[in-house]
Image (cartoon, rainbow, N blue to C red):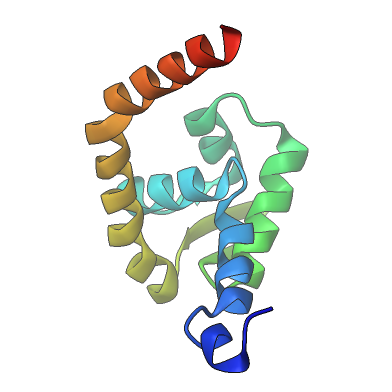
Length: 124
């Protein structure tokens, strides 16, 4: 068992809370879209993503709004118009997401080769 001084070096609680948000399939993509395109309506986001259900988009947008990463503005029109955009907090996250995407792009070939080697090793 680790002693209490070792636990202080790894803030697992805050890391888990943040990774829970970004471990889902859609949050990072939505933040990236809003960061590069700007304000989007629900249907525009849905079209940009393509293969997300309306329910999942709604759930993800609500979670991002609850975390303060995006804002939702409702215009009292008929039909109602709702726009989403990044908050300052969301914009501060964007460079980190872009760095992660760049890292993934630069290392994808190596990762795919390693997965293939691992699969072949497990098969034999």
